[in-house]
Length: 279
Figure 1: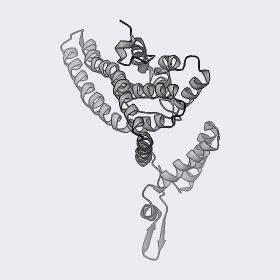
Figure 2: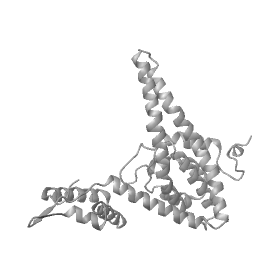
Figure 3: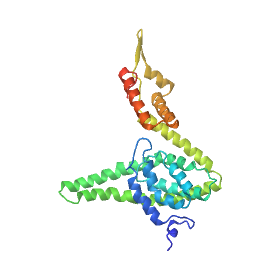
Figure 4: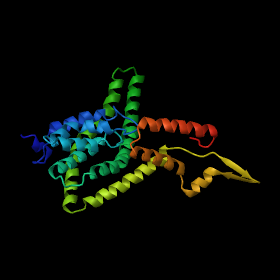
């Protein structure tokens, strides 16, 4: 049997070997994690083999695709292969038709990070991890030498199954949906909506992860004025938003990341010593 039949797409360049490659390489998703692009390099490594096959003979197209997938990406590892499958399906469309807007793939990736991470965290960190550890500990308490293997099996078997079927589901169903939207002229609307969802997700992460407050207070007569309360009345989490937008603006101006980090450390230390900001 021609391996292309396994993919369910006769015109596809990808085979089951490529899906195995994505599944196994997705295990390295966190291996180059950093606070600038997070899992981007791991994502690109995961789809690297099939991406080269899609753009075989088109070095410029391959370079553009690699640059696209170096955009910041971060989500629970196990379901990440679903996003990889969708990304590969979209890249096949891009390779076949150069007139298609290529900004859609990153908008789709960003819009899926939050929902899939919520599901992945619930199952893998909230259920499978606890179940695996509970079983492993119970066997270990009895002195059974298979305890660590029980822990690894209970956690990693569903993990690998989700990775394997995730990439195929994303590739097949994702490509079918994308082709249907493209034919109906709805792709631009979906991309626009995905961008909105991505912006909302980023705003939520700013509010949750960036913690900056102003502890300054003034006394006017018997009245105590707390600066942070007035800032919250203007916009809640205003200081985290200003800090994040400032860093974003610096990145857009191609200021080097080490310089931005150094500036944040110096500015944060100085304002902290003065009592103007607190974390």
